[in-house]
Length: 247
Image 1 (cartoon, rainbow, N blue to C red):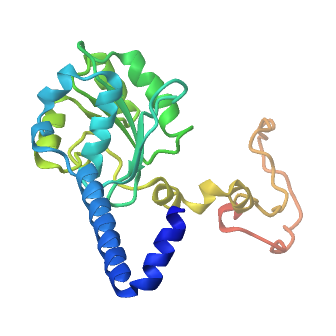
Image 2 (cartoon, rainbow, N blue to C red):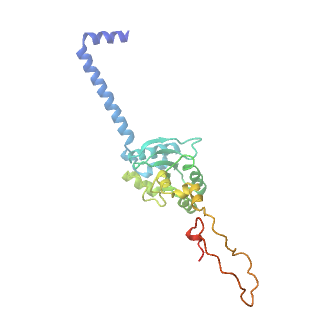
Image 3 (tube, helix red, strand yellow):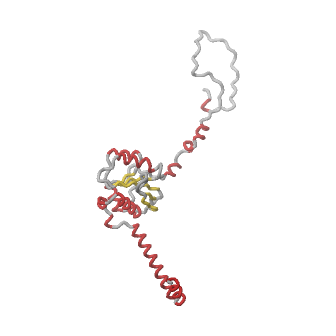
């Protein structure tokens, strides 16, 4: 009945129906745009690291995701929970690198075992270009050493406060931060390292003429030189490499 009434009204008043439809469509588009902008914009009261001290682990993950969106990251997704295998938040940096983020909202310092577990899954399982560990606290000395050796970018409480205040992704300032993506790093590997067959073929040496083995023991010295025939004329081998030529 409702549909039939609407159809009759549109047929009787087409101009008014068109205006109403345009107003409704504009309102829906405006509301959607405001919702998207609000979801991407970090509220002013959230732009301080102190707000994370009263958050739960899940709330901290969503706060970091909002911070990433406000910093220009794309395709940000919160995937934390049971079975996340170390990837609480994933996304892409403004320069296109894939980010895999592990969030640690701790009341104590982050220890070495947590960093080791994250290092073992970030790149090999989640294919991260940048493995980012974000915490509202600090790392122990051992954990910081593991992060440097495993190229884990760490955003501790101080760096997190600067990030929230400036909305600039703190990647270049982190010690051990890789500056290129995984594809660029693979492109920089020499061809002989990426193709072992070429390396083996490059090392193949053509057989040279027979020479006395340097490993054979020398014969007994003779008191007088023995009379020998004139040496035959030297014939160059079919293939001779410069590193095999005799002096």
